[in-house]
Image (tube, rainbow, N blue to C red):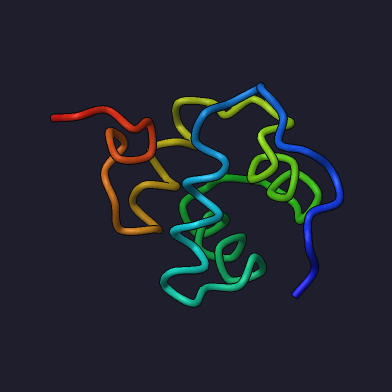
Length: 82
């Protein structure tokens, strides 16, 4: 497992949650990418890495697909108390 070399960015607030949830369910980045592609999200490994590192913005349709694939709510990804 590689360790992130850069500090987390400030372009999204869900990246760290996406990475933590992915790891918690023992999902590799390539598996997440495959599931996202099935849902019509065209994201490559570099894009996912930047998303998890909070270095790229996340579109609303990507957020919805991420929540579905990772099995958590959008509110959980956004750290919103329901």
